[in-house]
Length: 161
Image (cartoon, rainbow, N blue to C red; front, top):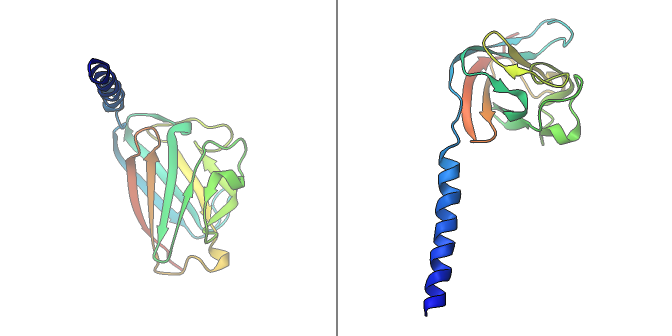
């Protein structure tokens, strides 16, 4: 009986220590963010580029970021960031409807990554040529802090002609 009590105390104690370590993780605070959906040429990416700009708050390393994109009929995620160049590998997307254009990411999530801090942007291109984005569609973009699964920024954009 004593051995069962000791075992249970050790198991509960281990759980409490693990749970308290998780409580010490803090989601960074992003004071605000802005976004735009560029339908014309935009730097090297071309048309249908989404840009989410960090306008203030805590800086966040690119390897702690994921980007979730939602359209009325499809969802996608850009994961395992940053990328080494400006193209996404298959391991960088969870994109069953081919919403994200694989060959054009930029800003802090490209070229080995940087910290997402005030004034810096995350950019990527949507695959509108595949018919996934139409005029008037609402595009919701969430930037997620991976270690805490907290949402750092949510921006809603509208696709225009």
